[in-house]
Image (cartoon, rainbow, N blue to C red; front, side, top):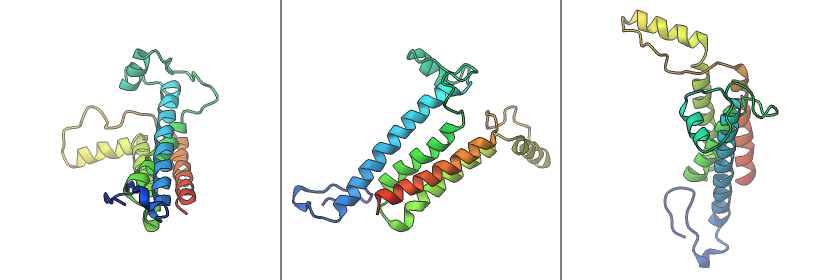
Length: 176
């Protein structure tokens, strides 16, 4: 076996019974599932989110894909679904590439769940008001645009948490 320092070690032909072979197979499956889910999430995003003028809509429209344009082009898929898919996909990919350790399988999930929750919360009015107060308290010149340009929705928070839970279960199932 050739060790690269991460979960995608190369198993040589003579190593067919090597215990790392199962780990490499699990990593490959996690990577494939993670990438496929992110592609699906991207497609859901361009079909369900209003983002006139944003890069995603411009690219999708240029490729001939119909985009949300303010209405649900696919009514059966909720607009909050990409938040959960984002956590799920990136947690699986990160776990596949960085670790096979049992102690760390939840760490990738927690990191991506935290990142997604943070960005979702930054879209809330409360976070914007806090930003204004920090700028005022520190006598900073107020930045004309809030760092996050989205719409806060509590379903996005729930979706991110659910995506993390499903990612943890998937990783646990494939890494047993």
